[in-house]
Image (cartoon, rainbow, N blue to C red; front, side, top):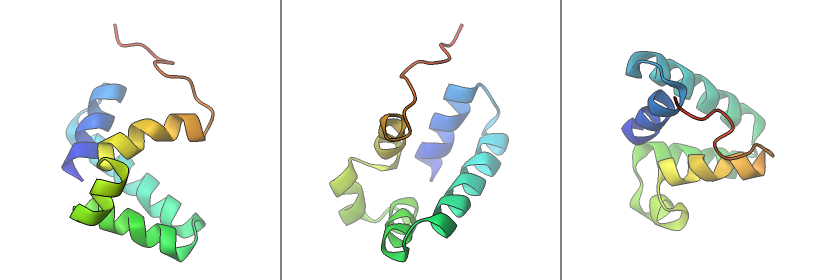
Length: 80
């Protein structure tokens, strides 16, 4: 979880405590909208399950790859 919080904080330019709130909210929302097997995989990734992380390349890598899934462009908001 710390890995994704750091990623969100860095990309959004916000403090880690705000990034944690945002990350928790998004993960909770996704788990309510996704089929339970997929929601379980999110829980496994957040918990640091080695098997789940090995399949996806880790939680931060999975988050980086979500942009293409939702049609966003890489570096849509470049850092100054």
